[in-house]
Image (tube, rainbow, N blue to C red):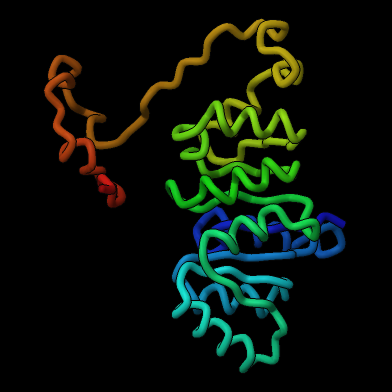
Length: 213
């Protein structure tokens, strides 16, 4: 039975993953669930999946989650902060880590999972964007398994021949081109793109984006 830790359990990808796990209780067991501040949602997930550990972002969230779980008679151990995230990601009690924490906050625990030689289901692209060489070196050095599961990079992964994982050159792949399919510049004239401002780039038509300072 595979023991699973989900980093970012209350986001859309984490929820979808738990839906899959719920369909196969004979194959998967949840070891740990994490969320930053969605305490109510995490408490409901803990009630359903009974993880050994749960991690939240702040002491206040941990206090509230502990109270909710104790009221339900659950024995899930509640922790908080980055160190706790890294600990559950690297735990000997988990086999597979799903990395779905949004943004830079997901880098440290995902790197901890790589250094612990885990199977990593990567939905956090920032780990590669911010620290690609460092992250991939850790994967190789510690013999971790990396599987991309977010939309774009999973589509690329599925379209490549199996030999690509061993050698891109041997698989005959020299270059991969990604095209933009939407966003704030979908209908904008190409010749005006060099004048784009940061504020315009953050103005997505479907969801809120922004620069983090």
